[in-house]
Amino acid sequence: MILMSLWRTLKSICIYEIPIRYTYINKLSQLPFHHCAPLDGTLIAQALTDNLSIITKEQLFEEYGVTRI
Image (cartoon, rainbow, N blue to C red; front, side, top):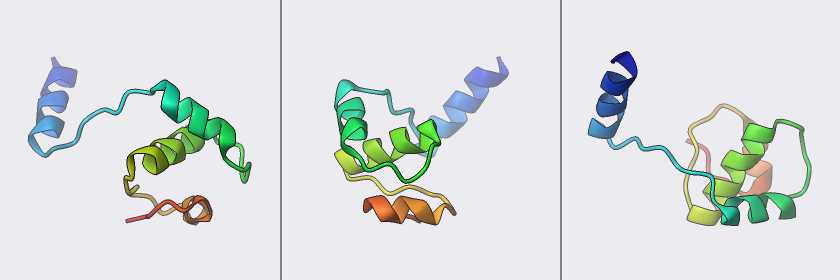
């Protein structure tokens, strides 16, 4: 019940889940290796593929050409 409430709240402010697609994995396999956090790499691949910005304090994302907010 709590998770459904959270999900509705997130959707109400236009925050949605982004499924992991083959195109993201393909992009991830082409990225240079700057660090070993697999989730970061997946987020970077999604951002680059879909032209998205990422809210993070991690400056390393900029080395991949990702716009940080």
